[in-house]
Length: 242
Image (cartoon, rainbow, N blue to C red):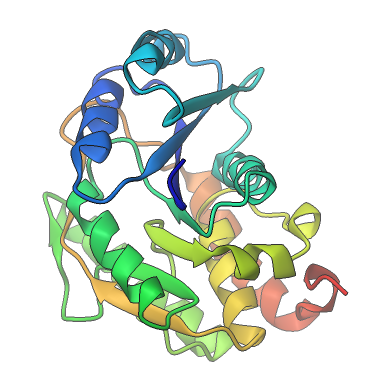
């Protein structure tokens, strides 16, 4: 068993899932993989299960009854990773927008003092490939908006490519995390930052998916806008384990 777990939520990712699993498993450093599969009608889960005998003890799957949202998928994965005593727990997309090679850079950042390392699109300018300019501007200014409201100094507040030390996740009351989309990503960073953990941004190049469909929708954007204000007003007392 590795000391590192990569959590990958999936819903209709048949075009990408085999490739991303094989790439992660080919890296020089050893990473275990946990797929959180939300009953994809395209057969994503079946592809994962066919690959599991090739990667015994490294590739795992949790199948859920339906599409329940990104945040709940990661919470499910965090709890599983904590129970299995992984030291480093990662979030990563299935669609190759996050380069699996960068897992090792996030891992090294946490080995060298970070409690949370973030694969950041904006720590060194704007490093996004294949997005239309409108979406780049939306994402960039969304992070700016979050910084203004929360006071965080993190450049890429909505980033979904991260590594946590287990102690960070053990300190958070995961059952009280309420957001499911990009607001979930903001909420987790905000809690870690407010608790005084060392949050470090690692520059990456983000490349938009070339296969499959984006899960972005207006509801996710709306949740992020109002969720940030809610975070700022309510604080984090209920989210910290005593």
